[in-house]
Length: 352
Image 1: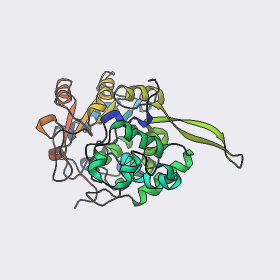
Image 2: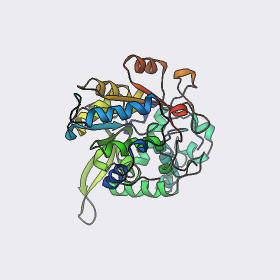
Image 3: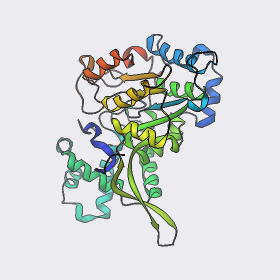
Image 4: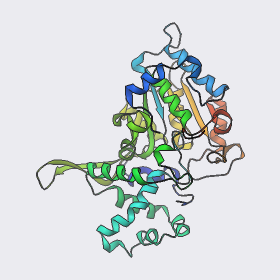
């Protein structure tokens, strides 16, 4: 495990590039629904092509008992990055939007912060000024808004925020901005006895609040950046856990592999990502036996979502960076690059 650092690993992608600020059936119901579909309709939001075929071939090769690369059900582990892989991550990570929007409530409880930076800048509403906040100031905001409360209090606050928060572009809840093609992959794998995990650089406790309802993935199958908690007793003598501003696991880059070992204990046979933060996870997966699947989502559709790289000549981005070096590695190592523009018939469930 990595040594203790600042909270929640948001530095994993140097979070802020700009500040322009459904659900699927859970659990066994997802699997049952997927099993009722005709074989040719397992991935209806995918265009026919190498990416879709790679998924179908992988499932066939790992689940047919006669296959030389058959994988026993207990070893069918698939891991998915979340931001940029399962849902929209631009123009900022949803968790960062949550933290910024929590600042007024924080200052209401602690008025002494009103004229203290960086809280003063956030309260001003000046997006240009907020976009220029250095990383150390962002970390102060994260530490102040994500800690100092019980786990249950944090879960309640996140749940309330998700009910009212809207993405600035689509004016929809963040949980409606999951990628429908990836939802279909989750259902397809789950219906074939794969255990699907979210392995994210985002806050583990944050993602656990909505993972079951949004993706059909229970809290214990979410591996994310985690801060420490402290056991104690409340005023009524009831035991509780309090979130502390101290990093336990930075679940990004090599930390994702460390998190997989710590929380899952098995090497995945399939891994899905979209950025340099997922590179080591895909490398680790592909180093396993058999015919592991490694896939990267390339955001190349500005009309329906966003376009950023800078791989393939796309605009650069500090959020979800997909570099030319990563693109070259994918081609060299036979990882499948998913083009949102060419491989997905539709991106969101609400599209006509």
